[in-house]
Image 1: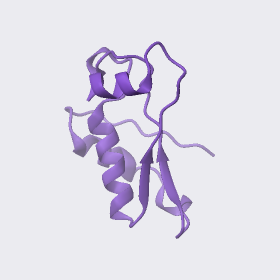
Image 2 (image 1 turned 90 degrees about the vertical axis):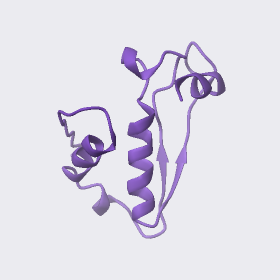
Image 3 (image 1 turned 90 degrees about the horizontal axis):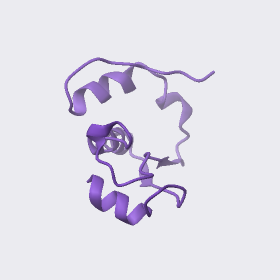
Length: 92
């Protein structure tokens, strides 16, 4: 069953950490797993618009993955208005 966590807070790493602590993601990982992180970077709009993922969310997820001794890989696709390279550069 999929789980979703919603946390109210100011922009930063801590609200993301609190949300991650509310879901059992650690139990889903095997010792050999690599974690793919798929942000929503379909356009070059910044996170303030709500269209793309806040870079701090991506950072927090990667930090937690690394704390578990896992490798994190950020992936994006050619499916939006802007190329992934341009979107990553513009959104941070």
